Length: 261
Image (tube, rainbow, N blue to C red; front, side):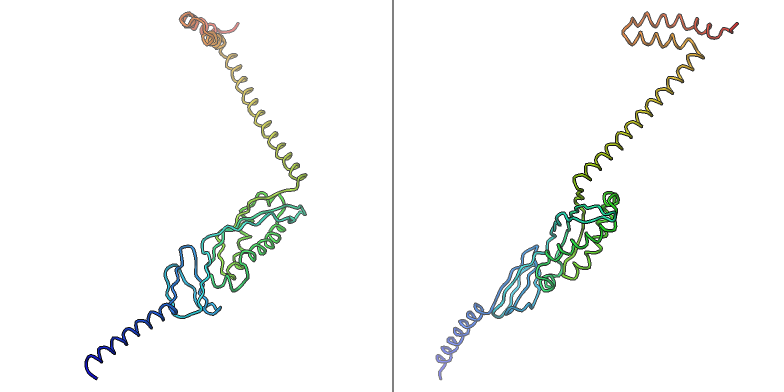
């Protein structure tokens, strides 16, 4: 075999290798892109084989599929649940949970729907916690109720790969008749507080009047001075008033200091 035949054969082999490489790359190289805010679950022939984080990923083989799981924080609203307080009063309480998937594989393998599971778990927790509070405490201690609910829900959420960031009691709804009675009680309290403030103001005014009366009794000239001030405030001639004031002060002072018979 001469040199030309060898070169020709090498060219054929190179071309065949290139074609084969292109075919293999086309049929067996798979590229995946995971966007921000998501986690990728890579399945091979229906079996979960890997969790892919944000970025570009290349795998070799066939029969791969990729499922995207949202990893951003999510608000889960629990609609008003009718429950009984410890004093047997029926109320409706609604919640808002701030949740986030932290283990995507567990969230799809442990339960069929993690949100439905959390919703049902929260309903049970509401009944348990509210049963330990009276109605008055329920209205006044929302923060304590939220804390207790979060403690009950955290463990259940972690078991399915979900983290609970916050639990907030949104609304506490009373029955119509009870709400009306509660409003009347609050109105009576406000009216009583307003009456108390008016009484305090009147008492202060009476004390001021009594103090003024004692001063006038001890210093009669003060009554005339107050009268002149009133005339001045009503627009009387200022020069006339001030001149009379200057002339009358010594007389009234001497009269007030004159010993009684």
